[in-house]
Length: 430
Ligand code: TRP
Image (cartoon, rainbow, N blue to C red; front, side):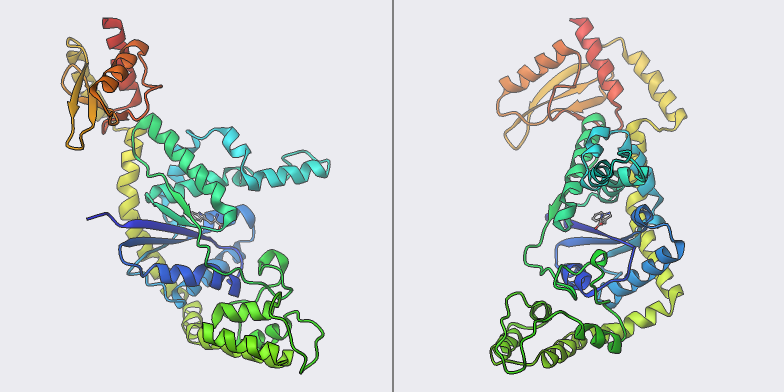
């Protein structure tokens, strides 16, 4: 049986969810969460929100509204992992471990940070004016979100792809130093998801101030839809669907047959006021049942809090033991346990470490390095022939360092320093 594919998405808790979020992220994610053979993680990225927003009340309100929206849209917290980032202390702990394997130069190249620097330079200010270390570290925090749960696929917009690549880089750096602990994540971009235009025809986005809130009261939604830009074509005049924001929004909610009917109505010269009425009714048909659940949750924050805490408990069952493994890997260890091992290693010094070559059922040739006491230190990747494996061994003996050996993996509980010491011993013993 293949293990389930893990998907993970974070939602930054600033602002109120709008129709664009619903069509572009919430609706497809809720559908995706029902696929068999997958495990799905959705979390409220409230630590990320602190980077953009210093208004406590807004952070709290937005967390409440976003949580309510996702649940109202049909996300089942029993079936998925649904939690709040700041309820998982392992996220911040991992952030530090990753910080220590991340090149500062890598972060210098992050788009969001670079954009701020470029803007400052253009304005003749200090390059880092008003740039917090939080903004600079954003990709590391995001990598911790992802790597903590060994997620394979990260559904994101194009603007986030670089962050996923950076998370891969950090996973690889860490694995290279401390053994294979992390899964390398990949961005998953859904090309079929529509980009929703806003009131002014540009992409619907908070930053353009052109949004229609997802759960606005019906009267407000009707008013806002009436404000969508159209042209000056009179009732009875045929209207093109190309470039019509109204048509595109309708299409994002309607069935193909309904869309076809509106296309015809455009050709037949439907009045803009009537088209807007159709759009309002179509959206309301989908949203109204969810609105009730949304309003009930927003009015009962204690219930929401309970759901989120239960989600955090579930997520921490995975996070806690994994972080213990990682702490051990980097050497944050119980001193008593280390002392016992150190004692053993001393008596084992009499015998030299040695390489053992073998062949696996997959037909590939491998070798491992064991210390004088027989403890497994490291394991190679597969080689096509015994000669190739032998060449790598010779190389390792000569160099006295594992630095150049691709695919060499540290055994569980072995520190890189142990391996380095063993190789050095071998190099000296020749
Ligand atoms: N940075 C993401 C955004 O602004 C939100 C986010 C935080 C995220 N952590 C994540 C997305 C981890 C995917 C995976 O959209």
